[in-house]
Amino acid sequence: MSINNDDSATVAGAEVSAAEVEDAMASLEEPETTDATATVGVLARGEPASAALPSSKDFHDQPDAPTKELVIYSLGAIIDEIGTAAFRNLNALLVIGFGFTPIIAGLFGGLKVLCDGILDPVVAHFSDNTRSRWGRRRPYILAGGLLMAIFSLTTWLALPETNRIKPNAEMRAKQKEKDKERAEKPASPKDPTAKKPGAWQNISKGFKEVFASNPQDRRLLIFLLIMFFGVSIASTLYNATYWALGIEVAPSYEGRTRAMAWRQLANNLIAIVASGFLPFCFLPIFRDFKQGNLVLAVLMLCIGVPLFLMCFFGVRERTVVVRKKGKKPSFFRSAFEIGSTLEFWRVTGLFFVLGKAMGIFQVFGMYLSIYYVFRGDVLRGTTYGAGVHIVSVVIGLAAIPLVVWMCNRFDKHNAFRVALGLLLIGSVIKYFCYNPDYPLLLFIVPFFYALGHSSVYNILGTMMADITDLDELQCGERREGMFGAVVSVINKSTASLSAVVAGALVVAVGFDISQGAEQPPEVFHKMRILFSIVPAVTGLLGFALLIKYPLTQARVAEIKEQLAVLRARRATESASAH
Image (cartoon, rainbow, N blue to C red; front, side):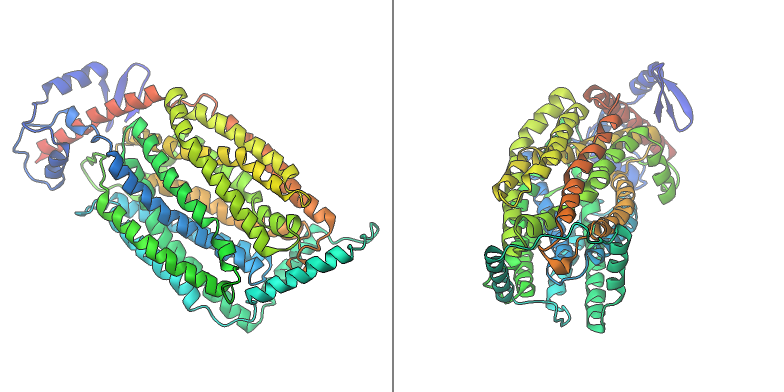
């Protein structure tokens, strides 16, 4: 269905004027019940319509979920954050724990994300077309949650033997010894005339290390890669359908903002805890980080399983779905039709700018914190990093009511502009705040960067939800899951390359993990530039994508009304056919 300037609409190839729509609505016989769910259920089962034909008011989406149900839905975000944190920590441990080159971490991350990108549209397409007593989404949420729990525990229970895991006490003792040597004997100045290896030489050296691994290392890497793929499959089953359920649990313009706000609230609360996962594994109470991760996996299992069961049993969909007559939509046609919407590409472009053009450089943060600011002290570096992350989360939580108010008062795209500006300012000040002489400066960054970062992603989710309504109006199909999947394919296909490029960039600037904190000064300087200034410049593209953005609050309300008419007409045609 497409909207023309003369207030007419095209439905299934026939042009209908606004007056004709009103006449059609008036001619519809008022049913004895206005229960849209019951009406749609009769039509979907192919039973004769014994009652009067439905009116358009039967096909407005059901009212938004009450606060209690939104809270239960938001608890599912905890599973998402736990899974994300587990993958993030395992990827970091490949370098700072197992001692592999950053290129291996980049390759693993890239392959995992590529797997996500392939699976997302498949899962979304099946869930969009699933009909069960539990709805379209919840069966996949249950399966994904259980598989995530199994793979997380198996990773550390069945880890192959390796001599790359050092005892936590030994690592701590060596760090104290290095700190003492550094204090007693300052490092000798570097020879400025010494020949330095170029970026290509550094990358070549890194790839040689990848292929020169011994049989023990190969067994370890193959096992970890299998676990990465297992986690990828499980997280896709969960995340693709959980995202779609968020659109359906509160279908209105304001309701979607509230649903995303509750989800962001829960996500940020667990992020406070998740920020401590990495330093937790290096605590002296554990023999090594393997034992720490195993204990952590058991704890997360005890927390996660009850939460996704609550989400499964306590949340239901509220979007009315009435299909056009004929065959079910094909996978490729659905993807093509979604891609034909200009607004879809605008919001997807914003995801790309934030996640790839800017996000590719964030890999430097961990290395700068541990090896530049804290001179190779893994426990202090990860602990301070966790502290900064906690401050970031608290600021993000405090900003949620402000974001909701700005979205409803000034429209979502204008609120996004403000948040993006804060994000770019925060990126620039990172250059000055990552300072080994004043490590507490790290806590200034979240007041700009984290405030902007949490806000832009909260807003982007609600902007994409509005586009699903526009897509249904234009194409006649309700496919929230497929929308999320197409976004995921685009983002993750580029992210898979970005992860490899990010790992290669760390090596290209000359960073060598075997040298720890003893890197040449110019290496750390290049890393600081790439970590702060370059992302701020690329982030300016986001403002260009928001020029003349059309989906205002008034326009979305208009689309909702037109959808109700379209659904009533489709249901009438289906009932008449029977």
